[in-house]
Length: 170
Image (cartoon, rainbow, N blue to C red):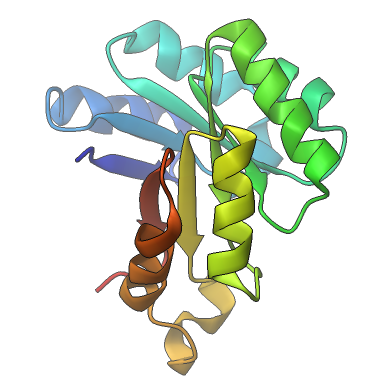
């Protein structure tokens, strides 16, 4: 099991200080979507340069132009890039091609996927590295989704990919 630290709303300086303070405990530093929207790929570059021993995940939530956008993330130093599970297969396949080119990994974010079991089976066959069940921030307080139940569904059907869980874990 790996511990992933989500870095969404801190400054770059605060993130670097946090990773210095937790050295040896964090396996994956996630440059969250809000951070990417605000700062682009600079946090990916800076975190990878400061902590080459930590895997850097660019939570780009790619939905289109899969190979092109993933290339940009991997070129900035990301080890893992996210793509949305509701994307077209061709988009996900493009992200997988980019990961193979750059020696990186693909995490599929299952946020918004209605049939987790069916889509997880399809994604597993596409050669993705991780399938991540994700309870959206906007519905975490509603009780509509249980991330651990969703994780059980995915774990029951995947054969090759690893499972991950994000959002709403209490």
